[in-house]
Length: 272
Ligand SMILES: Nc1nc2c(ncn2[C@@H]2O[C@H](COP(=O)(O)OP(=O)(O)OP(=O)(O)O)[C@@H](O)[C@H]2O)c(=O)[nH]1
Ligand SMILES: [Mg+2]
Image (cartoon, rainbow, N blue to C red; front, side, top):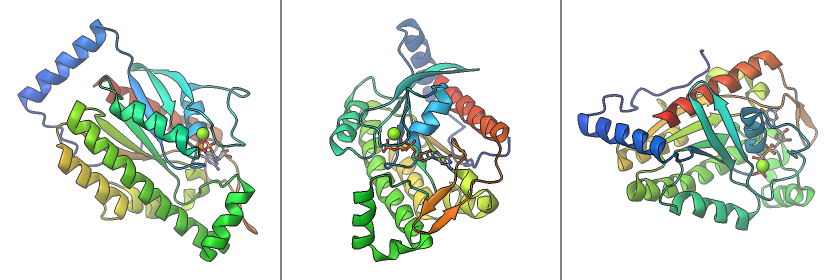
């Protein structure tokens, strides 16, 4: 499918040693039945739980999208390349977030891959107090463009922190092995996909791709892969102040195809 914004330098040419290590790991994980693990990170309101519920096919009332997650969502996703445990890290609650990040990154048997979720500035701010506070501290957020610029800045800060955790964990435990940049809510910017691709696509020089390239250089391109893809979950309008952006250009079958493609790719990466 044409939805993937992939990157050239993913270290396809594994040398023999890496290949043997990879095969050995696959064999031992099969023998000891180690659960494959994928974790979703990203700021509060970015769309982690919503994407997770589509990938794991979890229906309401088990999921609540009206308030920030108080604890991680956990569930199994199945596809052509097997199955994996998918877990989200709650974005808002600082203590829950730190606890789950510590579990993910400090555990020796750690996570196989990270799905880092961004949304081109369309972060949902559900708490009225946080909305008010945001407008007082950042008056430029009064317009939707100002708000989205600010949110894109927060996406960069957030990824910076995730990269620092990935760098340490990867050098220590050789995990996680990959990071997928999931550019979600693409139904809200389906007419600007080319510009958005340029902003997030890993071949460009914008802040997010640059950060990921730097991470790959530090950790080693044979040990760490990354890729990016647009996706979406709920198809609903987005409102900020007096502006509403309609969901358009993606119907349910296109959305389902994007989710399926992403799941296939995640499971294939996890299977090695
Ligand atoms: N239009 C549109 N809205 C979406 C999409 N994905 C999520 N949303 C909306 O964004 C809001 C936040 O989504 P969540 O999945 O709850 O966000 P989260 O990242 O889990 O947030 P925390 O639990 O606080 O970390 C919800 O109201 C969703 O309906 C999407 O693809 N398109
Ligand atoms: Mg959530």
